[in-house]
Length: 399
Ligand code: ADP
Ligand code: MG
Image: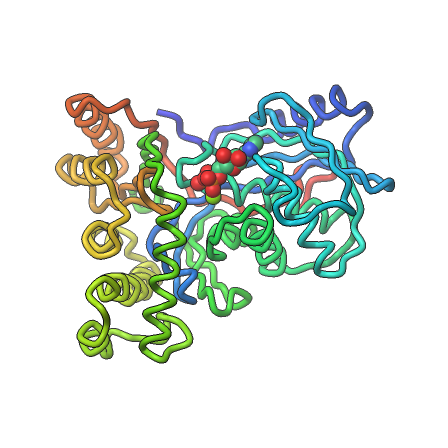
């Protein structure tokens, strides 16, 4: 099993700088890294102004970047199909760029829109974050650009400001109506901690210490390699449903409803909206409970909270699918302390909290269950809470 945390970042940084030199001639001004994430609990809550608890993955997107003064933006990715995309910064507008380049170009557009006099650049990306697996490769791509531009132009933006800029790129430029969790995780997470995010006030995020190995635990990530097509439109529809429910209840956001008010709200709402509201309210409570357990130094107590979160996503929010349900049930049957799908749903990845010595057994059981059901084998790795976006080279240090 790939342990993820053994990857040699220095040699990867050298490799991406060498590739940059071959592509564009001459060295980059620097190399930056931005990670993917898994969310421990707090799913579909960020766009309801609620809570989440992500960790950054050791898998990340590296960016070698060099500023340009002629207003040209050149983008190349080792995972981008081989072509270099060339754009003029002055011509960037929502809808003008399609394909993968919309995510990084959108960040340059969002910075410009916010009044920062940034120009073009030569950019080369190389990522170890699986794409489209619910592990936030899109946010890693955006956040790498945000931290690189911040450093290259001395913008001095805070982590949450960089995350907001990256989210704006994804929402307004790439056309994906995501909340702010993915970008906050990629920018603001720290090693050995989970990020307690309140999406209404991202600037007040807190690091919650999380030493899984020290407690004899592991977090197994299982990429089901399934992405059901209904994902995109369904996400927007769910978000719209939540906003309609909040409006009907006379609330700014569903975050403003607590468990005490839930029975009355469920009674008052149309039947198609009530389960959405129940998920968001109970999920916010699960984040609060999970943070309490971690603060008490009891990460194993997260297990049942994760499993309850999965049931809520499956039965109330209805974003699970046969493959993610199977991964969860097979992991639990094999002795996982808890398991749930993570990310937006309709496929993607499942996480399982396991005793470290059960990691391989649980992974093996899920793989066997997939084989028996005729699914492709899942990709497995053990996640350690890792650092957020930062500068790698030259000079090292943080952004
Ligand atoms: P997720 O963020 O869960 O991985 P998304 O659908 O939000 O899934 O984002 C995946 C998309 O992001 C890919 O289809 C691709 O367009 C883009 N992407 C992410 N990482 C890279 C990369 N390293 N190179 C090129 N495109 C990438
Ligand atoms: Mg994404």
